[in-house]
Amino acid sequence: MPVDLIYAVAALVIAIVLHELAHGVVAYWLGDTTAKLQGRLTLNPFNHIDKVGSILLPLGLALTELATVGRVIFLFGWARPIPVNTAALQIQGVHNPRRLMALVAIAGPACNFIQAAIGALAIDAGVTWDFLPLYVLINLTLGLFNLIPVPPLDGGRIIVGLLPLAAARVWARLEPYGISVVVLLIFVIPTAAQQFGIHFDPVHDFMNSILSLLGPNYGV
Image (tube, rainbow, N blue to C red):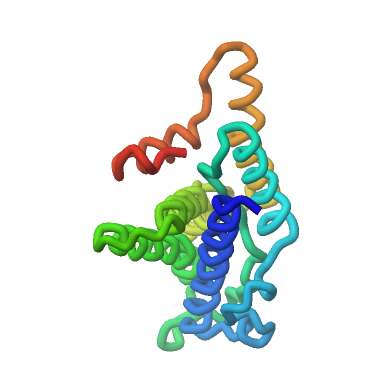
């Protein structure tokens, strides 16, 4: 197995496991024991793995990149979502499920950004592990990807928590279609537009504009 692939898989597993664990820990702090009772407040990756998001998709992306450019440049994926009982969320006895679910949601991307910062600090301190740049990139990418404001992604849940109630109800109704919308925006529409010589790739363009601020090694 190529070393790049090993590094990429290891970085992705750590990033997505800690992402989901962060959701569960914050929900637990806010009074919801669902994840704990289901054995999800653990670092054991096998308790978090999703067959498609944690194995098939990342492996397919990695093998495609190795076959085309000779190295793994970019990976993303997801774990099994942490179960959250929004009715149990409270702060000092005050229940506000919608607002508190936004706090649970933001914990995942925040955890990815913290991991990326730790990796970047290690690089700046002179640590030369080849694993680290890919670990930083994967965490930045996952954090940004999950902030796309479409439910069921974390960004969508954050928006639902921040909007006025009437608007939040409308936005929350997008959840059954959210993944389809994301797939269209990231894969289908950009690929179709490219066939006609048109560049239309808003998600990657946005992520690249953010990541490029960190230097030339952090584009997707």
